[in-house]
Length: 390
Ligand code: GCU
Image (cartoon, rainbow, N blue to C red; front, side):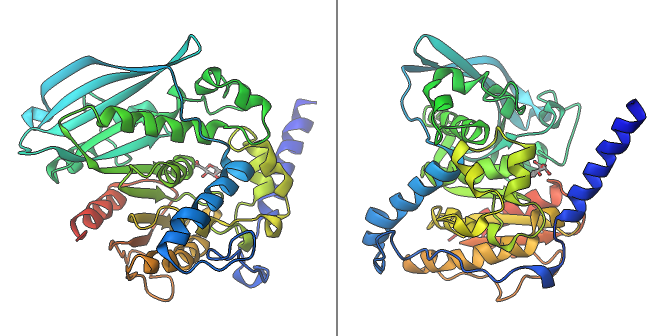
């Protein structure tokens, strides 16, 4: 029986992976929803019409159909410095280990925020904050373990503060237990088809960390860069789309329901993501299983919500699952909103070659050679983007 079940499992895995398209020639013809046409069919031509009418409309479409509502209210928030080391990283940085506690309806959650600030800073430091979806070892506060996923020394040496929190503080990444976190504060969301789910909870956490930064004099709150990889990159996009206090967004290998166009149906598809990770997005999103073309939005519109702030999207050459071409095309389509702000994109007409980064505002992109990952190469380019900002 056990052998039979193992064989069956392997078969299902093979069928599933074969079922995904990796052939450009098989990408169906598709029409993207127009960024500049309102639901009522009106054309949007001015910045004012974009900001007052179309932008809020698109944001609501993403809330209702994909990521869920983003609760803004809570009873109170408390910041506690749990631990501090003024001479961390051999004296280069100050470590702050902060508990961010949020209270609502007599319930609370705690976000454990790690923050290193450069000691030689003469003014408040811009900060990169990572939504960590991988092992906590990647953000070792003692710095005994070093990882390219969060190369804290490199970021500090470049003159930026660097921070991280773990998704499990907000919502465990598990379809059975994801509600044991932020959703305990907002149980009404669990009952709503357009309620928040795990990815929304992680993005909500990024906003609470932003609340903290607004109260930390070491931090330059006008220059907070939210970073996420893969599922964390879906969350960093959503965080920056709905919270305009984030100055810059980095979405690394975020793929389906991240920075890649759904309608291309290349690599991972909506049915698959909703089946494997039913706790990531709201119930309404399930209606679009195998029906990408019926979505009132596509992911270029999520990027458009971040304009005029800089966005950096990346891919890896061996990570076809995340559709590198579909990511590049989503950025290209979003250019028109940046143009409305008088910003000219530096992206080439076609996807740049492997390891040919374009770390230039407002829309930065690269396709790194290698696997699905977040590496020091990627971070080096995020820093270049920051340096080439006007
Ligand atoms: C899976 C999932 C992706 C996700 C990735 C990750 O591959 O299908 O959508 O981005 O995990 O988070 O690493």
